[in-house]
Image (cartoon, rainbow, N blue to C red; front, side, top):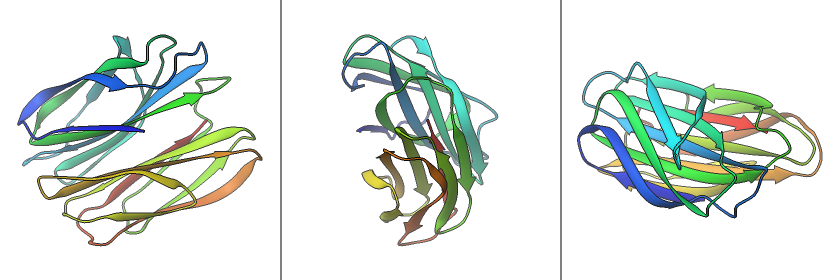
Length: 193
């Protein structure tokens, strides 16, 4: 997975030349988004990936920060510009980017948690993948259960983390957790395809 962050105070963030994996007609690019602000979370967030509008999978505001997953089918290119637009100013922003080869871009299951550990229950189809994104308002680290950590990054004393796993067989009620070493308004989102 690729990661990027920006500590600028802004409503829009552009991450040029972001790695999006090998080109494929069945490639789905998934972007985990974490935004922090000094006010309340944004009313809306939009994301484009290499000029293609991404679909919001799930999004939640926790106090002054925002956590979300977006995805888009992007068949060409190995890098792309990812553009985020928030409806209100953010103090900083971080993303984690995954490339998934799938027969369908339709989300199979999704869940979220506002607890620490962030407890997620997902169903995953045979041959499918699960992806999780978490964040907390503290300079800390995270430990994932039943997903493999792909990113664990600090920006201005806040953490964002991402994890994923592929499954050969169907998973019913897969218990995923994201456990933060320090608890401070945690949020975790996850989805499967």
